[in-house]
Length: 373
Image (cartoon, rainbow, N blue to C red; front, side, top):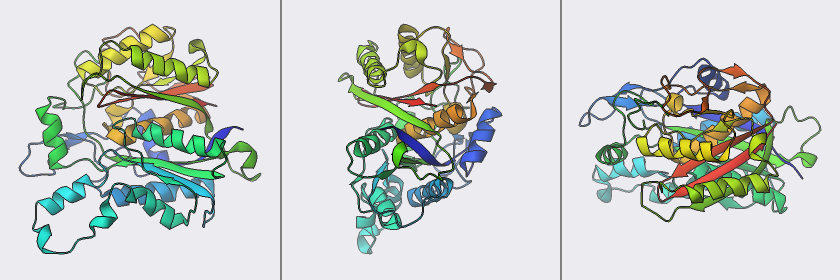
């Protein structure tokens, strides 16, 4: 039984649709601009969907509608599973309430509990299958894909909606990452000698997945197949990645084994590539140690910003589009590579059969998902 992706919905700083975002990415454009959404905080680079930051509900609803229309699914979707993850969930909403006199007036706090994003989708499509809300730092989006894959493989449901979103441009997030010294001052430049740090971005992606044998005969398309996945934890530090990348290496090797792939069979690697000194250095050394020198690699965070819990599934959407259209997306923002890897500096037509999406997060989270054409 092959698990395939038959619909994609995507919204990020590059565009309000999957097509627009992909085309701007291939053109080497960036959605990062200098913004000052909060008067008490300085002007800084941010990757916002609109001139004003967007609510998590609006991001999710938009991505969901696009994905359903893309796959041609008809509502209601009974026997459908729903997995929607986020690392920040409704945090920005709560920050707004905390800044006011919310204790003196009623507010729908039950509707903003972390799991309610997944419940919101289930309500909308009338799904009666299992519902889950993973939260695992920057690997959250990959966990959503993995959970949906397992439900399909074990027969718990016939179709699944998986997604992740982040509406994370808020005073607390900006201040917190700034105090850590993790934010860039001008832009995101993954793997560049002059990289400064990460740029916060908002966005959402939703994938519709089903067993290929049960997909409708008139299904318009399949973007690709989800082959396998693996996760691991460094158990090292609350934020810093373990410089001894053995757990991350073992995680990637498990994914390859489960997917029945050899390192030399990987056509493209979508790197986590945050633009920070520590992450990019460790990730580059990890790729050098595990894969042939010529494997194409890029990070799209120079275009979308770092969308935290949504970054893995947005990267997965770009992997699937690359496989479907046989085009390697560029590592936007990279001008002077520090590492001797085959970075994709400009969009390239290429014969692609497989792709890996890597994610690494706070708390030592390591995640990888393998896709096939």
